Image 1 (cartoon, rainbow, N blue to C red):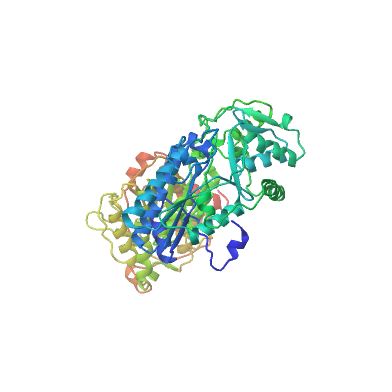
Image 2: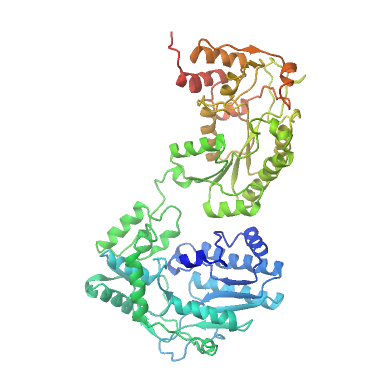
Length: 618
């Protein structure tokens, strides 16, 4: 994509997946789209032999999604479907007349088969629903900016690096090449002058063998072709020739203008000036780069090693295996809540464990933006640490109820639903502030609320929304709900830290509560994702600790002169808007899964007070 396009007032770039029906529908409606030029496709034949399912998904299903969206919106005036000359299959070596638009489709590889399948869908939607479709079938395109898995940029980059130029088979296969600017002009002609329901070949009569192309590249770099060209194993099937009859398009006024020598030189000059444009492309420069389709292979040490082997005249290539790869290498987390406390800590844990991760950019209540995040990041797990907890506390939620509902209920449910559609587990950080001591769970009894207990605390609007969404999330088998309570971390300067909060109060209530030490439990939540655990979990350390007990620890470890006073719940109610939840939660389920989990008091000492100790131990 040129910088000129990005700066154009009538241009807007949206990065997304054509297979996302939500995104496609959203864009067609919100951007008032009336014309589509459908170029999106997996196109490299070598890759189609290695991972043909990706070609079916993108080329056939993706096209179907686009067509259906156009049918539903009913606002499309032109739909240009871009296909390929390969759908015709091989042209006879001695044929004088090329394939015309009515020729039979006889694809010979998974790539061309999926393109032919997509064409059938396009034709069907044109006939059944009156969609104004036009199909094009073109020869090979080349020019600046082309990804180097394609033959010409691949040869140019290899020549620049002094590497051999690999040719499949004996190099006698014949292809026709069109310079990108000429092809762009062809599409402009078809868009404005083409007839709906018709097919147009975009081709050239000028043909050359793969060996001829390699020799022309060698001449540009003053290389001796006999020393640089190396013949390697052929594809499982390699069409000998594609030849098109382009008279139909020429009758609309189009003709090829760029000579081969001129186009090749301009392409070479661009790659010389922009050699690092695509970053690490070592995998694409292999003789058979279909291994690029394997997750985690691009730019890997295996790929680089294979390229070095090829450089040393080893033409028998072996695809890398996944044996010995670590579990963390196959993980990738998508985290929502970048600016939040838990979300920020999760990123640090991922960095420490070497787990790739990205923060979500979309708003949880906007379905299309979640889909876009998932399609872009391609995570293995999703973590939801986003939510409205109040600014500076839950009292804020009482006067901002729609905002609280939008994020805590609508946003969370939307995320769970989208992830379910994509087969993704969601680790959802919820709250245990949905319970309060009652007759069956009296204070000081040691009887805690279990995962299956119904919420009984409705004192704050924040808690109402969290209880509501937790109940609804039970219908989603892809969600792991973690009930966090009064979170504490070793960062005693963080104003959201429960210890930091109460140490700055003049008066505190003194009630035993279950609490969550994040330094110990957040890494456990990452392990829960790895184990694909589901359902509801009381995400607290076993046992309870009172406000006074915590402040006694604070005095012992941090400040011997620290003093505080207590007041009753009735007195507290006079200075807060919404009541606060106080309860004990039964952490037995979590303890069974993670026997090493410390009790709340032991965890506070190990993870919070000992690392921050200011008072010398006696």
